Image (cartoon, rainbow, N blue to C red; front, top):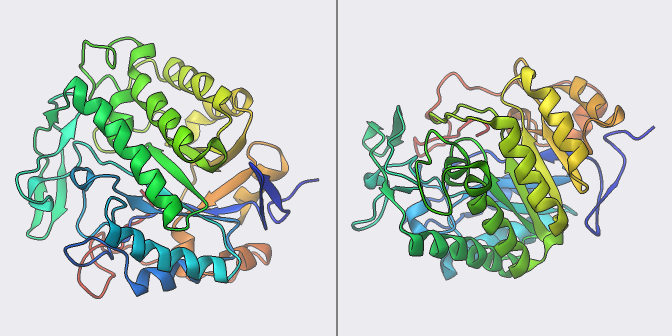
Length: 355
């Protein structure tokens, strides 16, 4: 019987176990260059016993920033900062992918340089607020991307992927979940376009497919992963035709031979769709399961019963850097402190839970 502690081949790379560290926003890229610091390198190196580390969301372009102090991968300074992180992880035998996260309409002009303004597939504002340096502020109406800008944004993902390889990452995860830009194109509530990227399912999946293709062409499919979260309403996402959308998306990307598909379950009720996507995808299937509270050792059984090839853990990795060892022994666990959504970092900004 295969267990979560057995090695796994990830598109040619041998991982020491089947426990992934899920991406979690840290907001520790202090400074004008939005580059990772020595603290970031220490943080990820401490967690190098994960079979796969997936970093916090990292913007592929300046306009893709949606939270304070999140890092980018679109400048030489950022590449140099991430190189210190990947070197530290590799020195401890770890494997690390960077998550490319363009937040789209989830953001605020106060977080962006100059006259930049949040963008989206359509000029549809999300309900809710975002945390800025001056406190929470309402989301603004994004500027709808033009046809040329949609294509330019796809190219920005590819360029950031190239920067990721230069920075020493083993690969890239494209964030297509949780209400950010790629997800905004997938969802009919935020995508009101009438061109080739909007309307029917085959058009709404087009942006996601084009980003995956562009990244895979730039750095190789074996270095490319995609994260999705079917039926997730986070960040005011409203989906229609959920099953049709995600089965069509998986069918479109599966022939590309990418390294993995990372599914984040929005609720226990989506397990049937999770299993359907598992059957349709021929690569490594990573699952961040819906659970009541932080994902526990009980979820390791999802590898044993074949539901997933790897299980991704988020919040427990914050307080338990050596989490794989603790999972093997079923504890003891330090409890993550999420009494305050904002706070935790000594600078006074966010150590967010898994997003």
